[in-house]
Image (cartoon, rainbow, N blue to C red; front, side):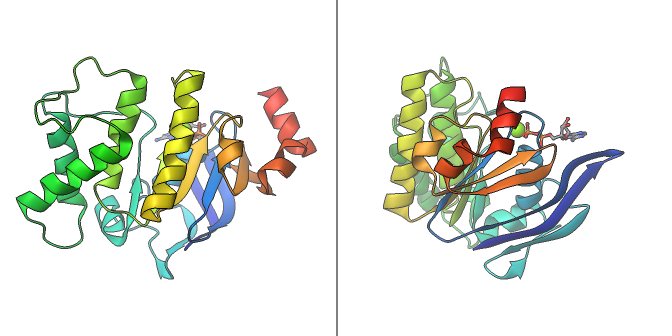
Length: 238
Ligand code: ADP
Ligand code: MG
């Protein structure tokens, strides 16, 4: 479904992503893990069009998307969540999600379609569909859910989830992991899940790609990753 080949992204002299290659197969949940600063978000930003790759190619459903705008990439069927949720606090929950639904569709959508998509997305993540509900007092877990709802409202075929567990307690982490499984099962959405910790993610992902200093150091089954000497070294050294 997605093929990243020899992706490199530099920021001045810093090589944030260095010759990274991996594939995502339709229907899988792929874990993209690595310590802080290993290049996970930059990889996402290149796939989602926030940054243009310095070199390399990114193909989605056999078409090159590297260097396209984030809007164009979203319209092709890729949605991403951001590590740090930044909703519009002066809009209601429903308005926040409806706005994403509006800008995220490939085809022209009516106002009514947008409300419908927003309601569906809020329901999927378990946030109130009540039109008066606001972002006031939302905790870390709910803000993550809102972020996910905004991405889902664009009706993606591929979801890029960045650090969904950051700032959550253990119970909330397990719930977030179950939610991604449910989204794949009920909506048939393929998922790449970025996380700096391994724990909860290992139960859910089909395969993992491990980054360190912008380079792929492991590709394979989660169980094998946990006993791989390089992966262990990176995690113990982090
Ligand atoms: P991760 O998500 O794995 O924690 P990032 O992809 O955010 O890592 O960062 C990888 C490296 O690239 C880090 O050294 C980070 O400081 C650097 N970096 C990321 N974005 C930028 C940017 N916009 N400008 C300069 N350096 C950046
Ligand atoms: Mg990151």
